[in-house]
Length: 187
Image 1: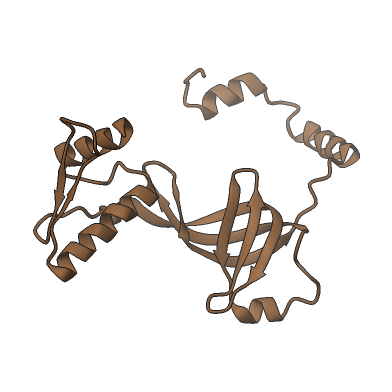
Image 2 (image 1 turned 90 degrees about the vertical axis):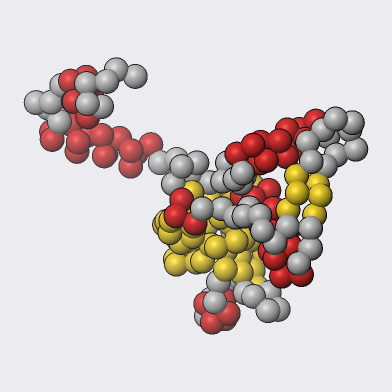
């Protein structure tokens, strides 16, 4: 209750919802949209005494600034747990950060010769990403490519790459190279 009251106070004082996480901002936008379309007025507050009250009506403007969301190419790695859908075909992939749903064409799923479920894959997708926070709008994700993904560690392959790189890097001091790459800033 106290946390929600603080959110209401911040929205009221900033007269903005841009700082909110995506799901919370969408909730406020949905209330704002309903107020505009039905000519309603909503008074939102908690049951605690002396807390902030936020009023949303057709004249208020609680909408996110759209220019902070840009289309981005994103990669997700994990196990596909579900694929299909009656009205909207999609893939659900279980990643280390949680489940992600990615819109897929029905034709793509029909064209798969083997069952995708419970196998590890990488997915290249496009979707909206907040340029300030890095947050991804998971409702906007669309599949671009399914990538075979084998996360097995291959020390022989890695050692071969290191040996090949040694000749290219033999005249380069790694410390000064990193310092130059960082623009003279020491981490």
